[in-house]
Image (cartoon, rainbow, N blue to C red; front, side):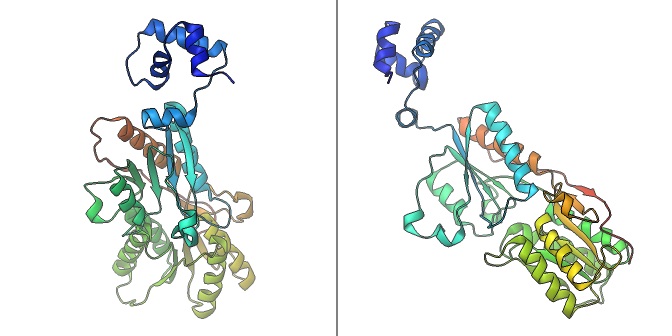
Length: 338
């Protein structure tokens, strides 16, 4: 195995010079650096990753911390990860994806200090311990989503305007004549869930001020997204047959809605209109008719989050940046007039 000493001997320089060429801890002339790197290539030398990270105090790794699910990633997650990976590739970073299930999060044997220079946090809640942990460690972070107000001056965010996006979806269904609409929302504590509920109620209360009950469900526990969509839709439609439209949290939740509608003999969109917050569905071939959605442009969310985080890591005095990514209403065949 080729060592740093071998490179130094072959290049005719000191071991500390070779170390500084790779760590960039001290300036080395361009000529000497190029000579050392050429020798290193000839000898097929690769610096010890852990030793270098201890010296430079950086790993060139960023983390993506996201809540785990038993099923496959939705297209939203896949596109977001692609966006993050694209910027990692462009800027010379690796990506560590952390999807540790919540039931293990507080167990000591599963806890460790992740070897990252900064972290992207997905699916925040109002009082998110992950944010507090990063602040305590002084670890650079970017949150994809809305944070609690107390963090607004401390934490960079990249997000959609989820209140406005939810209002637009609801408004579309209301204009089609739907009066009884079911919102299959995300988990109740998540900020995106709070914002979508606000947008939904804003339109419903304005349009139907006489209706004092709104049909809203929240994902709970470790149930999969598809099971959540299926079981809640079955239950809600059996007990509230006037429901004529469903807004689903994700494409996977919408797939459960389609399954429940078929079981109940409700034809989409003649008997039940369905929309989802999503990008292009990962299960596209399983949606018949094609699913209408609010496109969240998750790849752009990932690109902007990665760029913002890496800028923070590399800046001498990082600033708090807040970015909003536009959404697009995509109308296909799963909605119709009431």
